[in-house]
Amino acid sequence: MHDFVVIGGGVSGLTSALLLAQAGRQVALVEAAGRTAPLLRGFSRHGVRFDTGFHYTGGLAPGEPLDLFFRHMGLSDKISSFPFREDGFDVFRSLREGFEFRIPSGYRALLEKLCDAFPGERAAIEAYLARVRATCEAMPYLNLDQGLDTASAFARVFGPTLQESLDALTDNAMLKALLSVHCLLYGVAPEETSFAQHAGIAGCYCLSARGITGGGPALADAFDARLAALGVEIHRGAEATGISLDAAGSVEGVRLGDGRYLPCSGCVATIHPALLPGLLPEGTFRPAALKRLEGLEETVSAFVLYSASDAPIPSLAGSNLFVFPDAGALRTLGNRPLEDGPLYITAAWREDEPVPRGFIGISPTDAGQAAAWGPSPAGMRPDGYPRFKQETATRMRRHIETSCPELRGTMDHLEASTALSMRDWCHTPHGGLYGAKHRVGQYNPAPSTRVRGLFMAGQAVVSPGVLGAVLSGFLACGTILGHDRLTKELKACR
Amino acid sequence: MTDQEIIELIDRSIASEFELDRDAMKPESTLFDELGLDSLDIVDLVIVLESAFKFKIREEEAIRGIRTLGDIHAFVIKKKREMETQG
Image 1 (cartoon, rainbow over the protein chains, first blue to last red):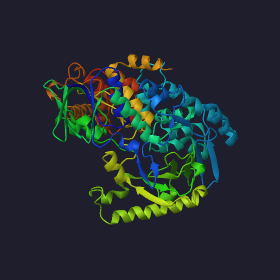
Image 2: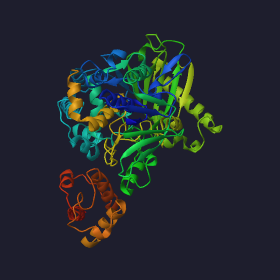
Image 3: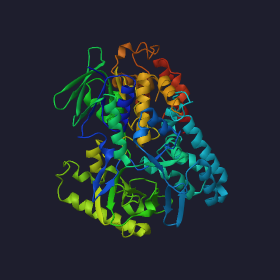
Image 4: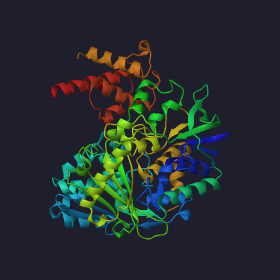
C-alpha cells in the first residue's frame, strides 16, 4: 500500500514523487516509457546528444528559485550548471530590418543595453522591466516571502495580454518583437498569452540564463538517483490505465496496463489534463468540467530539425539564436510558411566536448501540419510522410543557410520531427509542442481536483519548461503537505 | 432577451452542465451549501455562462461576491443590459 502513486515520470512527476518521499510518504511512480523523463533525456545521433526537453533555463544561478528547488530536493550535488554568455545568452535577429540584439543576463544590464539600442524608449523599457519584476515577485514559490494568493491565477486568465501591455507602452514594433521573443519558449503568441504568464517565464531569464552540464539526461539521472535513495518505487514501461475510487469517491488505487494494481490513498497525475477523465470512472467529472478539460487548447506545434556537424559550432556555445524574418513574425504564430515564421536555434553537444557539434532548429507550426498522416502509428506511416519530412527539412536547411551565415557548412547529418512526433512521443492529444496552452480566457486545471486524494501537476497547471514543471510539483505537493511547510524548508536552503 | 429568458437560460445551462435538479434550483439557493457546488466549480460556472451568453467574464470582484443562484441571475442580467447600452 502506497500513500501516493504519481502518474507520469516527467519533471513534474519526478518532482512530486521526490517531495512526497522526502516528507516521509510511501511513493510509487509509474511511467509508460521504458525510462523516466523521456522528453528530458532526448536522443543521440551521429554521436551528438539532442536535448528535446531542456536547452537552458532562467533562475538557476545560486540563490535563485530553481537553484533553491534543486537544493531542497537534494539534486544540487548531483548536477552542475554553467552560465550562458553574460553579454548575450540569446541572439535576436530580425532579417528584413537587419537588426540584431544580444540579450544580456541581469535586469540592469538588460535595461541599459535596451536603452542603447532604443534610445527614445527608456520610459517604456523601464516600465516593462519593472512590471515583469513585480509580477515575478508576486508569484508564490518564485518569491518565498510572498504568500499564496490567487490574484496571479486570475491575471493569467483575465489578462491583459502581452500584446496589449506592450501596445500600451510603445509603438516601436522592433522593441515589442524583442520583448516578446521568449513567447517561443512556451509556444503562445503575444496576442494570446497573458502578460502575467509571460512575465513569470521571461522574468526568470532576466535574472540569469544557465545550462546544465550533460543536459537533460544529467538532470534525469540526478532525479533517478535521488528517488532510489528515498526508496521510491519506480515502475518503468508501466502505463496507468485507470484510477480507482472507493464508495465515498476517494482515490484508492491505480491500475496499470499490464494488469497490476497499486493500492494507494492519493495520486498525483501529471498527464495531459484532457486524458485525466479517461482514467476515472464515468461521471466523476460533471459535463461542465469534462468539456473544459477535454477542450483545452494546446500550444503551437513545431517542425524540428536536428543537425549534427562534422565541425564545431562556437557561435552556439552558451548562446541561442532567434531568427525573425521581420518584427511582425510572432503574429499568427504557427500559421506562417516556414520562411515567414520565427526560428529558434539551440546547441547540441557531443559528450565531453566543450564546443557544440550540432544544433536543434525549431520552427513553430500549426499542430495540423502533418494531420493527414495522423491516423497512422509511429514507424508505420505511409510514404507521403517521410517525403513531407524530407522536403520540409530541405526547406528549413535552405532557410537556415540564408538567414544564419554562422551555421553554413554545419548541417552534415539531418533528422527531423513533426507535430505527429510530438503527439505520439509526448502524449499530447493534438501534438502541441508544450501541451495545453496558457492564454487569456482559458482556465487551466489547478493542483486540486474535485476527487478526494487526486492532484494535478505538470506544465498545463503552471507553465512549460523545467522550471515550470518543477514549480507545478511544488504547488501540488504544497497543496498536499502544506505550503507553509514547503516554503519554510525552501527558505532554509537560501 | 427578457430577464425571464435570461434566467431560464442560466438555470437550464447550470442544471445540465452540473447535473442539478431543476426543482431544487431556487433564486435563494446557495451554490456551495444547497446546490452542492464547490470553489473548484466556480471556474466551470464562469465558462458555462460565457458559452451560454457569448460574452467574456472578467469581473473578478463580482464573481467572488456570488453566493446564490439569484446572485448569478442578477450578475448576468446586469452584464447583458450593460452590453446592450454599449451597443
